[in-house]
Length: 348
Ligand code: AMP
Ligand code: MG
Image (cartoon, rainbow, N blue to C red):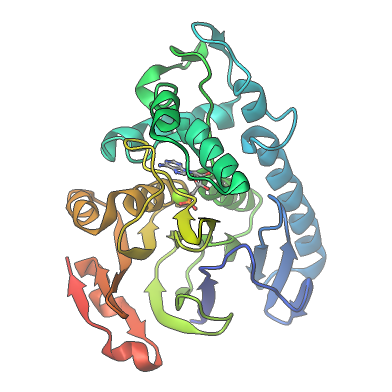
């Protein structure tokens, strides 16, 4: 088996990077790029593929992603998620198997994160979006009355009956977990169809398969496409980056994160600039990355130390600079680029 290195870039500005090609064919590597979910760059790379078969795979992957958007995209009219968001309390709603699996995972992460990861955050996301549009921060009373409709403890999941909401006006938001699930599902489909060596990414969500030595490039905050902070040598599985200053709203000249703390109802405001989670799958990594972004540095390090099978690279803003915190098991697998070689680091 020849040993190659595969470089994957994990971008902060996942939704806004530009690629200069749509389809690229090389002797040992085929790449297909498309922009679903409102313009997020998704890339399928297969190694040693038959180019004709590859095109077929690429089309199937694109339609599988579209099918999953029909399940999870709350902004797509008629999607399963949009229909659930119109539901009434104290009634059972049947769920597709994809939806059930993501709900089940979401409730597990709600518990593990002490309520920081919460798919019922949608009414708060909506409140803050409307506030940004008006340019006025929501009143405390508005936040408090919205919080009544938030909390995963108010949903009940049953493998036979589906989902039941115990409060009126509840809505779900899968933005913190669905992309991870989508890259995992594409990965599963590819494996079932005999593809062994591949990388599938959507924004900062990566699923890798094969015997290669994967090198995942983590972009520096605010940097361009090739501006890397570090390269992580990685095994197959999932890697997800959540840079929570990558998407924000501005109200009265202040920036507000798109990630909301479901306990306080306020946009997250802490020292974490970016969170990268490594796991054997991207669904769990995605949920955990969002939870860590909400919990902030101290509480997250506590959570991460107690979890098996997860590794993290956290970038903290301190004064005018940065500090990196990383899981001990990653110590020998991180290579710092350029001036990042002298960044202060803390192992946990
Ligand atoms: P991510 O980029 O994976 O960290 O997910 C961020 C997205 O998840 C946001 O744009 C919201 O759609 C949604 N979200 C915001 N706050 C939370 C939260 N506390 N728990 C779960 N999802 C959230
Ligand atoms: Mg996430």
